[in-house]
Image (cartoon, rainbow, N blue to C red):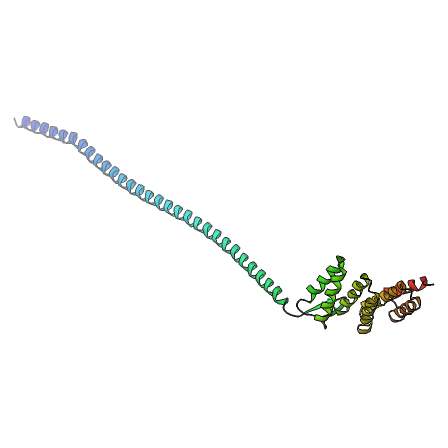
Length: 249
């Protein structure tokens, strides 16, 4: 009886132990699944966080890229404005330079100027050059009467002008063209007497000699030509005088 009871107790214990061991794997499996679920949840949380951070970084990069584009556009706009301002400044500087150049040119017309006339330098008053050129143009146009009047007016108006010898010389030519031989000879003689060293003086003497030859005054012409050779030797006028002397018989 005792032995049978012991055996029953052993069987019961064995059954209980088996039941316990059978239940143990099921409990361990449930514990592993919970951990896996938690790990997955944690991973999802980390992934969502990283995804949010990545999205934020992408938005930041996009914003910076847009700002960079805006800055580039602003730089391009500023460069264009700077170029326009540079062009405007250059235009203004040129206009200012042209203005002062024009102003200086206009003012110079009202101031005496140093000028070289027929190789001789002198001070030219405002209006002298224009007046002389106008008379010269009349002569070139064949308007000898008005040219003579203009040269006379010039000679009277600008007595100290460096144009004086030249103006008197061309007055003599205008009178000669008008067949005023006496008046032209007297005018040229004035050039020789007042301005003996002027380049027009030997030309005036040659013109006087031509006048004298045309009037049949050979002796007077020969004497005038001799004066040219003696007084202005080595010049073109002296050579012309020598040639004319050889032709006079």
